[in-house]
Image (tube, rainbow, N blue to C red; front, side, top):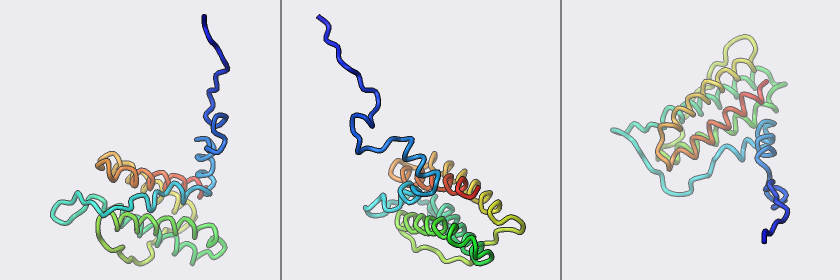
Length: 166
């Protein structure tokens, strides 16, 4: 005898409290989920290092996060009407810098606001985000497992920033 019953393929129907992948990605694309996707605070343990002679492989990502935060600050100062739109993105980069600094056991470096370039400020920031996202993806592919989650989250956040700047 064969027993049959209804088959539920949708995990959301089985567990309505669990958001669907589509909803999470939609939130991220609109900027509402960028803090959730940023991965900041993901690692509460002590910093691990994969450094060679004091130079950690994540140092360039840390410097890039600080530079991106500075670029957003400079753009917001140059065009105050964009400040409310750009502040959350700059704050994400500061949070990324803090998480990376904690992971590699260094202080967050201070940097002067980076130049955004002349012309369309949003286009310049979008180009910078796209380049930074590619760098984070490359770093994620080369990172050990204990670092890949944070770096992957930073790459995803940078991708959402580029879309938010359209």
